[in-house]
Length: 484
Ligand SMILES: Nc1ncnc2c1ncn2[C@@H]1O[C@H](COP(=O)(O)OP(=O)(O)OP(=O)(O)O)[C@@H](O)[C@H]1O
Image: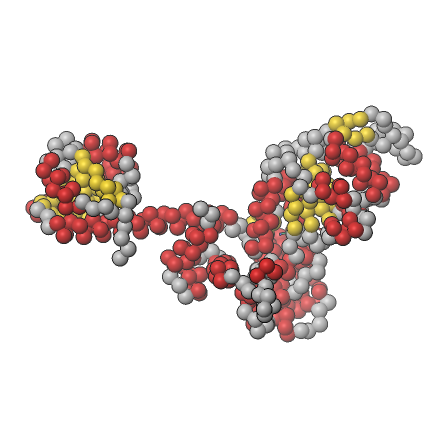
């Protein structure tokens, strides 16, 4: 058994010679011994020292041992409580044990060996309690950090945990955010989440899709115009810059914006000021910028679609949305979410997907990402009858030809282990002599644990069963991930 050190024992007895002989018997560099001659003195020690074990006499003037242990059980429930008692007091002692006030007892007169063994066992129990508390706390933290829903996002994949954390961190600051990622991955949803979690949430989030508005109208859309600024400008009109004052301006598809207007946007970001179209008056607003593009920004700069200086002004915080096919089990979670939503909306009864339909959802590549999946589920709800969505319905809507590989679980499709495929390839660890991508063992282990937790809906006991380790081993490993 592991030696325990650095622990504190409190001995309580009204007779000084008993305290002396108990202290002598327990003297060791493993423990710090504290003594008290009354229940009140004992409580005083407990208030100032991190006591792990209390050994108290039963019969003391003033506060009895029973009364003292009852208070300790209430105020310091994790402190191990031991009663020193004469043989004749067994009945009262058993009663105290049954009430949970006492962990164990020592009989007077005691054998020193017996005393040391009892204390050692008590301290082992104390260590287990402390470990359990730590594990509970770290599991709680792990669960809090491992979210399956975040703002309007659905998905518990690791790839999305990274996004949730980035949004959490970015939101409270004033820093501009640049969101990249393929079409339909949730860039607008991310902008919304950033605004909703920011101190600007009570002001407006104004979204401008730079690809959807003709370039000749864009300047007026963003900065507004005055009456007569151009033909058709029959009134003064506020633009997005004024409407977003105090809030957030989201410029989607920034790479589609006219280069001359990009220069004006850059000036606006730098100075916080702008002029409406047709006006010489400068206006000042307080706007936070969030931009997005589904282009690779560096390529867009090279192709002269995006100004480099504007990009670096906007790219203070970068968030990259992963493609749906990189999100483990998320496609199924999202599909179920939208099945519920659209069943309700269309007044139809659907309870889920056939096993093969589920497999198809997990295997399909989703080139249109979440938007495509959402639209597919909506059309499946409209076009078929419940209670289950079949694979045929999905294949029809996706115009897919019969292909058995779509229904084979991914982990059975390739000869390389699932772990190797799933861990993002780490170029820094490519072995120079063999050219093989070496994955650190700790990463493989963490991946396996996270997969098991995901499959078991975060049930650690079940996940431990799947991984063929004890739950406490699993808890310990999860705990090690916590930043110290
Ligand atoms: N993780 C998610 N969970 C649930 N719904 C999502 C998720 N991600 C995106 N959506 C939904 O998918 C649709 C597309 O999302 P969004 O418009 O934010 O994508 P986008 O990346 O901005 O697309 P684009 O590049 O085409 O502008 C929206 O209806 C959005 O609500």
